[in-house]
Length: 102
Ligand code: HEM
Image 1 (spheres, rainbow, N blue to C red):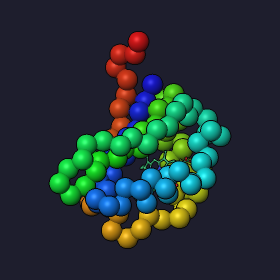
Image 2 (cartoon, rainbow, N blue to C red):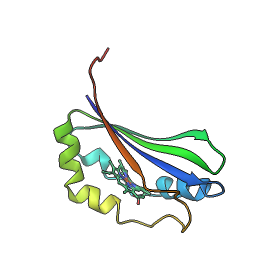
Image 3 (cartoon, rainbow, N blue to C red):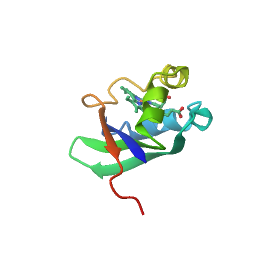
């Protein structure tokens, strides 16, 4: 099992616009070999931003790497962009390999 989380710091007041981009997106994940699940997570609220994470679960790192190199990934990221001022800083990608799974 392999997890990829991309964390976004979203400026206060831009949360609903950011969520709308995700809700309205054309998703290709269900067609991708090795894809297991997706969630957009809303996390802690800080002084100037709210933390969100896109969370995906994969059967293996190979399946995730192949998706990142694929047309599905490119098409998903070539859609309507978020309003200017949405992001504070760059998205931070973190990946995890399951050590224990129950
Ligand atoms: C390797 C790094 C990245 C991963 C693992 C990742 C993960 C994902 C996933 C799983 C989706 C949904 C795709 C679908 O449903 O078919 C997605 C869409 C999206 N990603 Fe990424 N992403 C990455 C890079 C980025 C970057 C650099 C940004 C820049 C802000 C970004 C912003 C978005 C947004 C706003 C969407 C939803 C709307 C759309 O598809 O345009 N992602 N991403």
